[in-house]
Length: 169
Image (cartoon, rainbow, N blue to C red; front, side):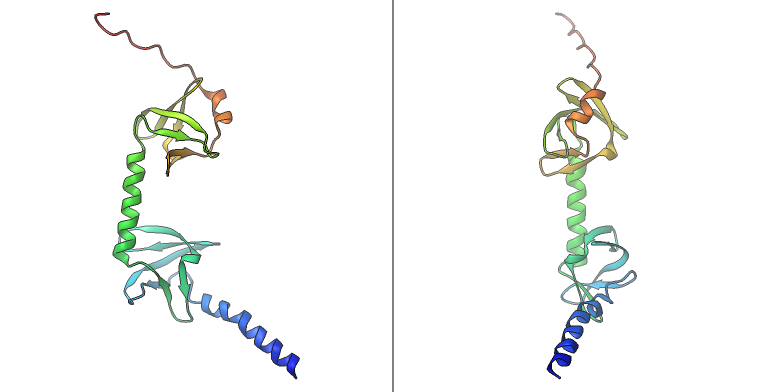
């Protein structure tokens, strides 16, 4: 009898997280601790989900949420989450600037940004210039980061054009 009780209790404890997770689904409304609406879950992909607020679609780890049988809770208000997203976007835009340091996925410094336009970024490597699509870089804590390594990019570098002569010299 004790074994059956133990097994039943174990089955219930294992099922409890599944029951709580039932609220964590596409279309669920996410609320803050005070009950205010933060947004709606529009996608779940493994350990991440996408939350749509009134202004943004935000990818977040599922572990950032608490799901009960009837609600999904998030620790920030909609206004706080929107402000955090907008601040991160502003930092990312500011990171794309001539002179910004670019690192590879291992943290090695590739070199500074020499030029950029709406679609590409030109980086000065030790052996020349390499041009990458803007989408191949992201703002990191220490400047821009790309998924390629220095060793992968160096064979694609082209010599920098000669410096323009300064008039009057």
